[in-house]
Length: 208
Image 1: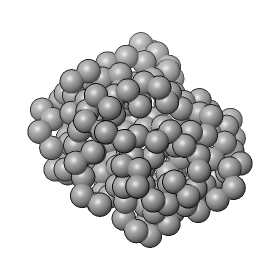
Image 2 (image 1 turned 180 degrees about the horizontal axis):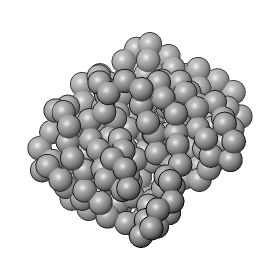
Image 3 (image 1 turned 120 degrees about the horizontal axis):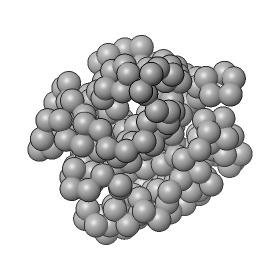
Image 4 (image 1 turned 180 degrees about the vertical axis):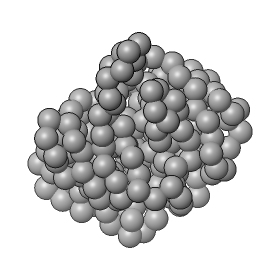
């Protein structure tokens, strides 16, 4: 059984995520798009870089991949981590270049930042996260720790229950979603120094 399945669907910064997971203590990381491997994995990581629709199309193009994710994560409770666009794909829909359907795991829509004086888009660089609630994914990470962001859109969950961390950038948006076995970050933990590595260590230690 592969400890962690890192999903390769042509839309993720796989090498840096893989290296960060290994640095955080993972001893078996399979970079894969094989539904059978996903179905046996202890944990699943979905990275994402690029446009919402292109990433969703990349997932949908691999036969059985979404079904294997659904079964292993939502059906069987395997710990899951979505990163950047990998977080956004969990929403009902995204509004980047038109409206596009997402996985629907988290009720809500992915929206664009509204341009404003002094507000550069994309939101790029270091910014702090305010932890709204306790969850094992963020255990031991100091309040207002800084993480690295690169995005022009953000997920807006309908239900605040899973909104674990928020960040200020013109508005206050959800930067960490954590509810049960389902976790996601708008930032890139693999680019976020010790705080990001700590989050990966926490994910590796989550009970399945």
